[in-house]
Image 1 (tube, rainbow, N blue to C red):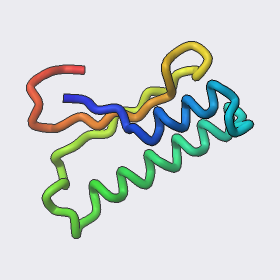
Image 2 (cartoon, one colour):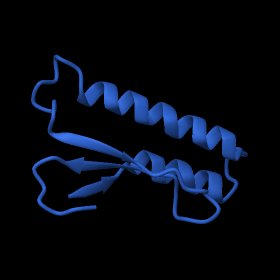
Image 3 (tube, rainbow, N blue to C red):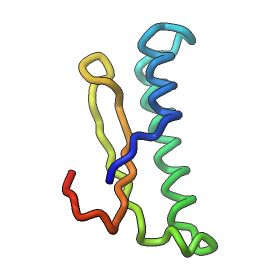
Length: 82
């Protein structure tokens, strides 16, 4: 099972429609910060229930060519491949 991070989709739409004047570099910086923060939360020792249960998959796409530069969270127990 994969899930697109909703905050990133909202941020991409804001970028795409020019609602915040965000540059491509700013979009990438925010995406990277989100990835690092989410990874830290999921792998934190105090969050044992999530440790090893998820894998973040990083798509490094040009935002002009696809729906978004995205981070997907893949459930480790899923039998489907992405």
